[in-house]
Structure formats: structure tokens, C-alpha cells
Amino acid sequence: MRYARLLALLFSLCCLPLFGGLAQAQSASASLYAGEVPVPDQSDEQRAIALKSALAQVVVKLTGDRDAVNGEAVAKLIESAERYVQQYTYRQDVATVDGQPLLRLSLVASFDRAVLDRVLRDRGLRVWTPAARPPVVAWIALDDGSGPRLVDGSDPAGRAMQQAAEQRGANLVWPRLDSPDQAQTTAQIVWEGDVATLSADAARYQTDTVLIGQLRRIGDNWSARWTLALGGQAQPAWESRDADLSAALAAGADGAVDRTRGRGAAAAEERRITTTRVWISGLRSAQDYARLFETLGSNDLVREFQPEQARGDGVLLKLTLNLALDRWLAYLPPDGALRLVSAAPPVDGVEATLALNP
Image (cartoon, rainbow, N blue to C red; front, side, top):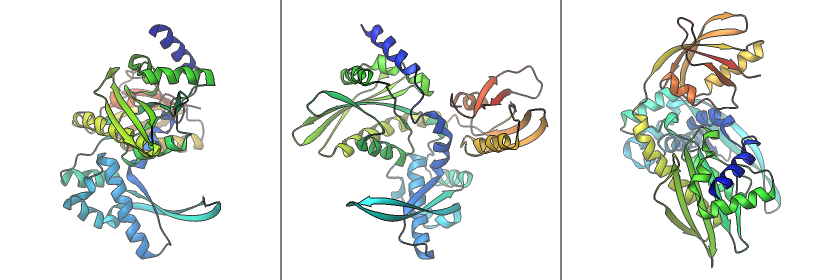
């Protein structure tokens, strides 16, 4: 029975595109070093205050630790936020409050990655490296009395859970099913906590990490049971309870981050600076070169890159990475801008060949 379920679920999923998945992984990595803060105006005074709040957000994302900003060393770092900012801009959007449009102004600031990593480590904080941040596939079902149904990123409560994860630098991936019948069948699988079936699809997202949540309405509260599966193995479950559904889901995201961050601590020790040369083909226009450089520039695992030779539709690049080349190649998203051609090309001085996807 389980194998029939597994085949049915995998067949339905393999026919679908990723939903909010790894196509955004590189930009999500870059956003670890950016913060966004509401401001009343664009005055120098408000900007200075907002930059400190933005840097505090970044520290929490980089460490995965909500309490990291409470230490004296980090407090002094945040007070000097203007020293570390690379750029800032203001963003306006319109929100609806009590049925009325309201104009909101926010400051968006990004901070120097290399300097901030070094400063945090100098202050005794462990930076939770992107290589140690697996995407977390979220299978969440809730029952409000009418039977279990799936929650995803389109639900307001799902968006609150997504935001809770992002605030701590984690990347939730929401699977998507194509029909109500598939969704109902899968909701029952999630409700039963079938770890093997739900973990089998994780490889599509280049991760082995799955969060399974079952939430039940009991009186005025939501009672939740959470299970994190790593490599298909269920870890000890935990529970949360809250009257507010968004808060109950956010507790699940926090629990997943606590457990994956601890797991990532050992992986972070494997971080090492690597210099390598790769050949990238498929560059047929200035726009292609611009897209390639933007992709590499927004990838937090790439410290720097330098073109050394161009010929035909390809370019030889010298890359300086934050980890070994094979690990960087493994983290390339399957539907991203770059795809691997060969990890062992028969060309002297070239350690990998890639191609820019059209």
C-alpha cells in the first residue's frame, strides 16, 4: 500500500514545476545580508535608526539565532551599522488597512558579506553558512473539524510561517499538487505522518530535509505536532499550541530552524576557501553575460569571480568559492541559470564545464 502511495505521489509531483522552490535559492542566499525596516520618512535620523534594525535582522538570519543580538559584542556591532552597509534604498508600497489604502515607506539595506562574516566570527558567533542551510520541504496539514487539508504559501497562515522561517534565514519550499483530488489524498498522507512517502520527493529540491506538521483545532486552540525528517529518518517530534493559527505555524518553522541549525553547525566546519577555474558556455549576447555575472554575484557561495579568457560562446572564469567545487556544483538549482555539463572535463586547467540555460 505504501509503495502504491509513493508511486502515485511521485508521479503527480514529477509532472509539476517547483513552487517557490530553488529557482529563487540564489537570491534568497543574497538576501541573508539584507534587511528591510519600515520608516516614517527619509530623514538622516530615521535612516540611522533603520540601518541598526536592518543589521539586527541580518545578524539573526546569518546565525539563525534570535538571541544573537542580545549579546554586548553584537550590540556594539549594531550601533556601528553605517560602517558595514553597502547600499540602501527606499521602497514604497500600498497596504489596505480597515478597507483604506495606506502608503508605506521602508528602508532596504544590504551589508558587506565578507566583512560581516569576519566581524561576527571575531565576536565569537558562528555564521550559519549557506552550504549548511538545506531547503526545508514543508508538508503541513490542518483539521478544523471538517477533515485534514493542506496548507501552502498561498494561505495567509502559510505566509506567516514562511516569514518566520525567512526571519531566521531558512528557506521553506512548498510542494504543489495539481488537483483537489491529489491534494486531498496527500493531506491524508501528511495527516498520518508517512515520513518515507513524503521524504522520497525531497531530492527534487536538492535537500534531504522535510518538515511534517499536523494541526488540529481543539476548543479555542490549535494543537500541532511537528516532525523533522533528515535523510528519510524521522527525528524526535515536538508539539506546539496556540490560539492563533499563524503563531502555531510559526512555532513549527522556529522548531525546524533550531534543529537544522544545530545540524548545520558541523557542516559549517567544512567551509574552506577554494579557487577554481570553470568554463561556461551558452553566452551568445551581452545580455547573456549580464545574466551570468548577476547569477554569480548574487550567489553567496561565490566570494569573487574573474573572467580570464573568452572564445566563441564561452568564457573561462576564475572562481573563489566559500566551499569545495563539488559542493558548489551540488547546490546549483536544477532549474536555475546554470547547469553542469561535466564535473571532470578532459581539459587542462579547467575543473568543471557549465552552460547558461536559455
